[in-house]
Image (tube, rainbow over all chains, first blue to last red; front, side, top):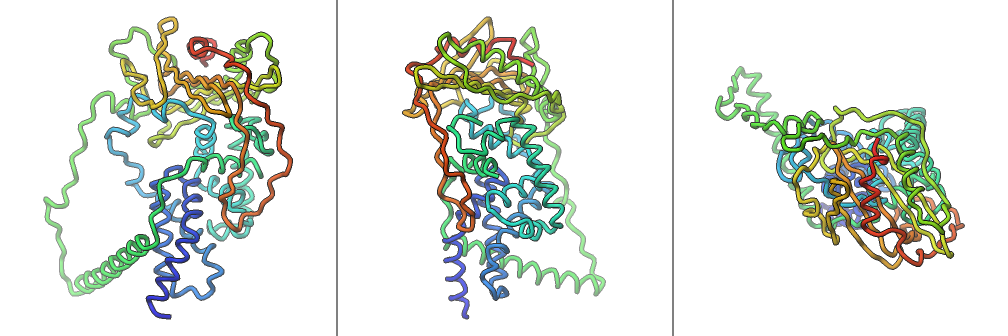
Length: 178
Length: 280
């Protein structure tokens, strides 16, 4: 397969999967711009590995693994913990904007964002992406037992933050409820 | 775990910016790969030079660290997660440091505010957890911690409305003297109740009717109170990954229409937000 074929396949795969991968990234990091960066990082690594991947049925799992590990790595880099003191930074803005009113989406998103990042990743991968314990363990590079314990811990964390409202979400409810 | 999926769906309810197209993504991937290859080649050259005994000395000026930014007193205080000392206010604003158990205060006040003739149908949640977030916690921009929250749903004449109150901690100092409505795009007014300025916004949609929200800024966060004439029906997002299993239960909770009239006026919602009984 020539480079042209390889690149057209890559672009086709991107068109089919980039949006859902970016949604997953957004659920992990809570920031659309960072989600875009993480998605691009994942697809760049996929591009570099494309010619080495013979079984394309594993592409989804490979891409998710790159994305999640990039997310975990991004937050370890020191420069990610540094924030310029410009308008929009937490240090100088006196008024919490969020258009003035945190609605239910903001509360739920905030609750999810409060989880430690690995627990958040486990919950998103298991219950949003519907991956098995083994698939999540492969992505995170840990044991199935660790995934199970992180799942339980993440749910406990969410329950602590949201209280009975978390159980309320087990069934479809009227918007406006937590 | 439908509750986690529901949280994810609601979090994705607001669409993100347009995704870059495939050609752009490919171009970036090509450039990154080419740069990586150049760096690898350069690394090989440096390694060869080191083996040959070549000393690489950086130019001093080019490697000098950037000077530390001159932080004013307020910036220093904020970076430590504390609010600056008030310079003009005579009294310190109340703190946003609340525990989940403080939700009971919120619930008590909201239940008492339900107008006569309405029946309270649901109150959520209740917690005895008295853990308070550390003042040293550092939050990234835009992040907030939920300290306490409650929702009170009530019915009358076949309709259903809801009050909600949340204490959010964001580590930001009290916006003393700021125009509270400046960052808000919704119709906004500042209502002062017993000397406490409350930012009040209104919005109206067909599903929820009139929604009046009030924000009382606190030291390190704010108290948010809303009064909704109705509740929006839940609509699951169909834009999920193709390999996601569809295990949402089939049954839907009965959706009731909004109340015949908004349960509270803007002044009343502002008074709720200013009520000291709501504070931790």
